[in-house]
Image (cartoon, rainbow, N blue to C red; front, side):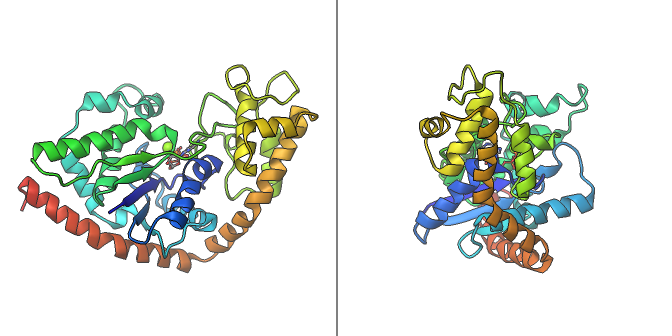
Length: 333
Ligand code: ATP
Ligand code: MG
C-alpha cells in the first residue's frame, strides 16, 4: 500500500514556494490517489525550534497559521491526516534510534546545515540543527512512508531518509521499512524575490523576499514591484544570464498555468516594470480567495483545534503500532 507522508514547518505563513513546490502536488494527490493510499501531512513543530527556541505564544500562533494556510489552500482533512508532530510522541522516539544509525560527518555535509549553521560561532550550533534530518527521517518512517512529496531543497535530506530505512533493515535483517521515494512537483524551487541565488523561505528575515498566502492584493503588488530585476527592460527567459527575471517568468508561468515561452510571448510588448504589475494581478486573482478563507479559519481557533485533534487521533494508533514493532525488531521489548 502507498503511504504518502510529508511535513511543513510552522515557521510562518506558507508562501508561493511552499505552494508550488509542495502544496499543489499534495492537492493533486488528494484528487488522484485511490482511497487505499494513506495521506499524512504533518505540521512539524519540533523542527521549528532547530535554530533555537521560539516564545511559546509565537510557536502556537505559527502552528495555527500553518494549519489555516494549508486548509485554505485546499488540504482536505477528511482525505488527509493533518496533524501536529509533537502530538505523536513516536516521531521523537524513533529519532533516537535512527540517530544511533547515522554519522555526524554525513549530517555535517548537509547543505541546509552548512547554510543555517553560518549564523553561529563555531561550537555554538544547536545539536538539533545537526540532527534535523534524522527527525525528518523518523517523520516518514514511523508511518512506513513510501512516497514523500517535497521541494527540491529537500533532495539531500531524502537520501538520508532512504539510507536510514535501508540501514535499519540491514542492521536488523528485516524488511520493515519500505524505501521511500521522493516526489517532485512541476516547479520544485521558487526563488527569493530579492535574491535569485536563494530559495524563497519562510525564515528569510526579509519579508519582501516571499509572497505569503496571507498577503493582501496591496501587499502582493508592493512585493512584486520591489522584486529584483536587472538593467534590461525586455522580458526574456534566460536563467543563466538573467536569473532574477527568469524566476519571475517561472513564477508567472506557474500561477497562470502557462509555459515560460508562452509568458515571454504574452509579455513581448511590455517592460519588466509592467510585467511585475501583471504578475501581481495574476497572483492576486488566483490567491485572493485562498487569503479570504485563511482569514476566516484563523479567526476560528476552535475549528483549527478540532482539525488537529482529529488528525492526531488518526495518526497516533498507527505510529504506536509501528513503534511497537520497531522496538520488538530491535530488542527493546
Ligand atoms: P524555513 O525557511 O523555515 O525552512 P521553508 O519555506 O523552507 O521554511 P519548509 O517548511 O522548510 O519551508 O518546507 C515545506 C515544504 O516546502 C518542503 O517540501 C520544501 O521542500 C518546500 N519548499 C520550501 N521552500 C520552497 C521553495 N522556495 N520552492 C519550492 N519548494 C519549497
Ligand atoms: Mg525549509
